[in-house]
Structures are given as C-alpha cells and as structure tokens.
Image (cartoon, rainbow, N blue to C red; front, side, top):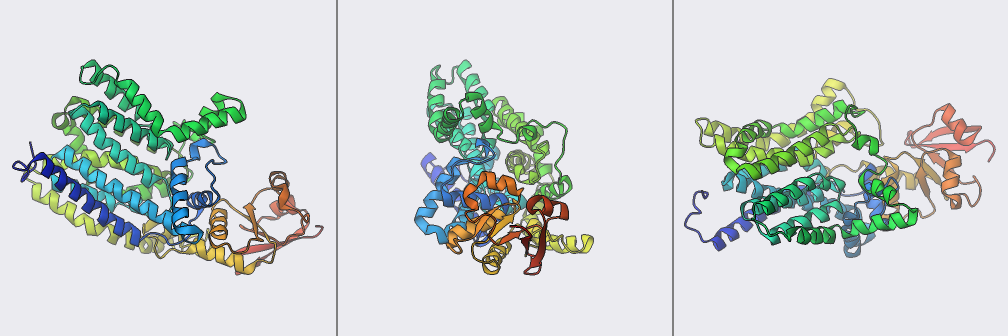
Length: 509
C-alpha cells in the first residue's frame, strides 16, 4: 500500500520526492546542530580525538578498540581544508553534519516501515531533538558518524529483505565494514545481517555465491581497521592479542559485564531518560506488538534482533559515560515507534497521538533549557569539577555554542604558567589543553602530560626532563599531602589563578 498522494506518481518521481524529503530533514538538522555546536576545544575523550587528529595519531593508547581510524582520517581531511586554527570547530561541525545525515536516514527508514511520509518526518523530528542525539551532535565525537552508518544500514537491510539483490547486499556489507572503522558498536548488528543473508540464500532469493560478494565488500569497507590489526599482530608478535585489542582494548571487563553498574548510574539514568520527553517509548511498544503483522516475519525478526542486541549492550555497559551509548538503541526504538504510530494513526485516538507528538517537538528544547535551573533548585550549586564549567548546564542542556569552559581553561594555563612549564593534569582537562596548544601554536615551551607518579612520567617520557626537574611545575587537581609527597618528596603546593592551577615547588630539585 502506498502513501496517500503517491499512487499516481512514477517510481522515478517518488524517488525524487523521497530524496527531497531526506535533504530537507538533513538541512534542517545540519543548521540546528551547526548553530549550536561548540566553537572550540572539547573536554576529555572529545579533546583526545581533536588532539589525535592534529598529531595524525591513528592508534589509541588504550587499544585498537578506541582507534576509530576512519574518523581520524576524515578529521585529517578537515585539517588539510581548514588548517590547525579552525580544526576544533570543524571537528564539532563534522559531528553536526553526520548526525543530520543520520536523522535524514532515520526519516527514510521510518517512512519505509510505516508507509507514511509524515510519520517518517515526525519520528525524525522527535529523535533529532532528543537529548543525547543533540548533545553529541555539538562536540567532536564518533557516535554521530556511527549513527549515520547504522541508519544507512537499516535502509539497505529493509531493501534487501523486500527486494533481495546481490548489489544491495554488497552495499550493506560495505557500509557495515566502514562502520567498524568508525566505532566497534558497528559490530553488534553484523550477526543479524549474516543470518538474513543465509535465510535469503536458503529461500533462493539470493544466489549461492552471494557470501563471496558480501565478504569482499566488507573487507573493502573495513580494510583500514583490518590493516591496523595485522600491523599490531606483526609488531607485537601475536594475532590473538591484536584481535583482543581490536575488539575490547583495555575495556574487556566492561564489555563482558553482566552484573555491574556504572559508577555514575544515577546521572546516566537521568540523562538517558531525557531522550523520552516524548511518546517514542510508548509508540515503540505498540510497534513491537505490530512488528510481524506490519513488516513480515523476516524483517520483523531482523529488526527485533538488532533492537535486543543494542538495548542489552547499552543497559549493562557500566562505563561512566554510559548515556552516550544509548544512540543505537534509540534508533531501534524509533524504528518500532514508526510502526506503532502507523497503527495508532488509524485508531480513534489518532488526533490525540499526533497532537501529543507535535507538542513534544517544541517542548523538548524548552525542558532542556529549564533542566539546569531545576537541578540548581533541587541540588544547589553544581559541583566545581572543572574550571569555568557549570556542570548542570553542561550535561543537561545539549547545545554548546555558548560553552567555552575548556578553551578558557587552556587560555589560563597559557597565560599564568612560566616559561618551560611542566603541567600535570587529569584525563579530562589534559586533552583540551593539548589540542589548544597545537591548534593555536601558542606556548610551544609548555609540556603537558597526565597527572601520574613522577617516576612513571620520567619512564614514559625521558625527553620531558632535559634539565632534570628544574622546570616550573603546575598540577591539577590539587594533590593531597600523601600524593604530593609520593610525586615530589618534600614540596610545597600553592594555588594560582583562584585555584585553577597549583604551583608545586620541590624542596630538593
């Protein structure tokens, strides 16, 4: 059954209108995310990505699982286009563009599953304005690019089941392989794709030689990452270790977790729940009930299996930033919500459901704007974890165009430290400083590294101390007396710049 108004259109005309709808959704969210993107360097992992792009570092010190080589390659392209000075902004805008493409793809997926154009646009609107989607579209991150790939895969998967073709299978395999070069989460749906391929071959809807084509396309897409695994195996002398590094890195315990919870599970629960200030979850429940009847057994089973894999992985992944990993689950919930909305659109409560969905579009950003004030009222002043950063606003409001705390901190370090300074920082504040120093090419004399035992710093970076320990030393956060003694022996530690940094003066350099 075709959508209203399409029955008299030729297939070519329908494709053209479909592309224009996709383009309209992409342009809307590209403008929204671009205008609200952070303008400079980012804290923590996002800052690490910016620093790795600036240095051309395709590997991560915690293992190949965090390498994200395709993202780094795209960032190097931006570096070539815009230069070092504009690289932080351009990487943030890359996230905005990738997430906009993901929302365009999601609108197309929802349209196909519901056979209603307006449902596709409405679902994409609710998801595109959801908290984590918008939040991650404004800073340098791999997840927007991952989501663009996943939504593209769902489009191809739907086409493959409904109109089996070797070329569609090859496109799905190629895109899945490219996804692995962006983030390991792209591996989760892969077993489902393989099973769908086998089922279609058994039913003689695909030729027996299809696996060879799919394997070739997948290897082509994942080639960059596969080459890095082989290089690691040769360099370290073991394929098993290289595969382990590629699959889990230093996070094997977290990936295999079945019982533990995040150390910040309350915060993650709140941030994850903020994605459902709309009826998406309720619509998804209706959709899952209607899945088989609406989509047919094969497609319903495939989408249901992917949904289970994504949701289970997210729920039991106990990392501190767990809420970020909800994105693939959110896409699968949205796909089911499109089917649910299609079912309710022919029920007695059609107008009520549509009205609620439309009202949620402006309500979501209004609630995000209100959330920091509510947190301040209920919990008091936000904790002073990082300089210049309002924790309530930083986490609860997704827009970042007015969030400059990481850059302000880096500017203070450049302004307040003496020549040839050694700056020891934690893993959150070190990356933006490193990225800032490289992008602005200021203070090349500053040596910044992780806040860790001085003996280990010396062992890791022997060139760090050409003058012994005569460099002016600065540290953040403030070390305890025990840590100060462990690091420097007898030393004094005094705050500068209102406690943003601490100057350490060893008694016996």
